[in-house]
Length: 149
Image (tube, rainbow, N blue to C red; front, side, top):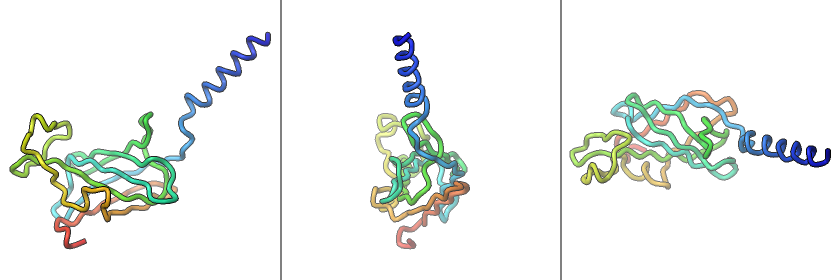
């Protein structure tokens, strides 16, 4: 009987730890990347938590209308913890400035380059957003001219 109790205890611990997620409260967002020139398509968006915000941040990819959702864990959890984030945007373009598909590789497009100007494509991006406890709509507006910041 004691052996059965040990198995049940081990299974309970596994269920609580293995299937219960990481215990981080995440809220869903409806995001959109926008510039003065319109939606920012096929761009990756990275949310980097500022001091006091829990979690490791989140990643997403915009569609042709600039809309995105984010994943913020190794288990593919959607949304992100409420808090303050620095936002980094990256969009690869071909040598002629054509936006590349999200799955493009450097080998396929050897002349590709970053299409989002610094500092918005760097870890020192000045873009910041606050995610509320309710989540909701998040518009990230990028000036087409960095001097307009």
